[in-house]
Length: 198
Image (tube, rainbow, N blue to C red):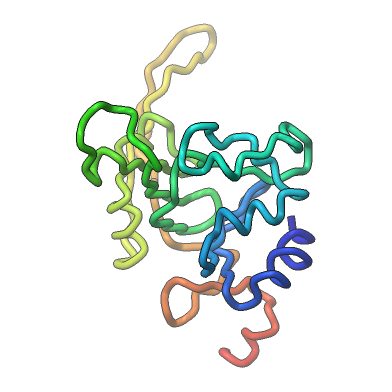
């Protein structure tokens, strides 16, 4: 992933690209270009572009050459455009996306096209469904900490128990990154630029 970022994307886009978040096998970046999908298509030797619909607005970018080829990057949201990302720390982020087309037979509004997905490591899926994009925004802007209740059924000595645990859900505290003055940008501890800040 680092090779693709530093030897393909950065030389192609220079300062017009910014890494928003990276995970074990994926990253989200913002690129300031005339047509991001055309840019992805121009990099199709590195990409699996088979996920695009054959009839949708991105049909011209569909390419099955690298379909399911290990090591190729794919668009994880092939029918959606990411409108907003709030990344609090690794494995804790929220995506607000907009569908490219509506499947319902009615006049679409912005609300019917808007989707929300969250990742919050350590928080049960049931609890994640109750966390809104605004909750992530409040944690980022106001340094709030939220909690949730995780419910599960556990077995102890062959007896089943229903367990309810209240735990921290969202927090912007990241012990691996130094948060810069803008409250959004970060540098890893040990980064050479931190010497000028401290």
